[in-house]
Length: 138
Image 1 (cartoon, rainbow, N blue to C red):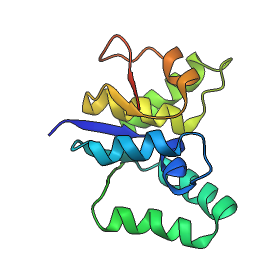
Image 2 (cartoon, rainbow, N blue to C red; image 1 turned 45 degrees about the vertical axis):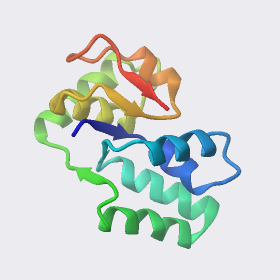
Image 3 (cartoon, rainbow, N blue to C red; image 1 turned 120 degrees about the horizontal axis):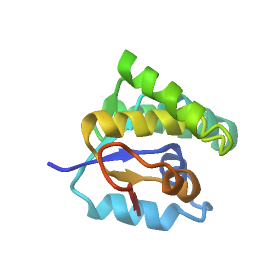
């Protein structure tokens, strides 16, 4: 089954009906049969945003979705952390941040080129090692 890496923005957008991306993300996820993989670094960021802006129930729904197998969590490795550091240094002026760099490192290791993200700026800027450019979904 093809896989898609999931960024923080779509996790938030799915929960917030007022988010500009809500309809696009929910529609995409409902139509897709691809495996959704969440790099572990995305979870604390998404959980924090959901809890802070939508309340504890939204944060709990995120955790429940992982527990129920709706998404797979992918751990970081030491080589991933080395690559994250390289990316943070290379794109220091763009300030891509740890979470985005962890998504890139995970994508490279798993050879996944499709990202479910609302962050067009950072992921359009980054040049991954394993493909010419990321396919940004939805």
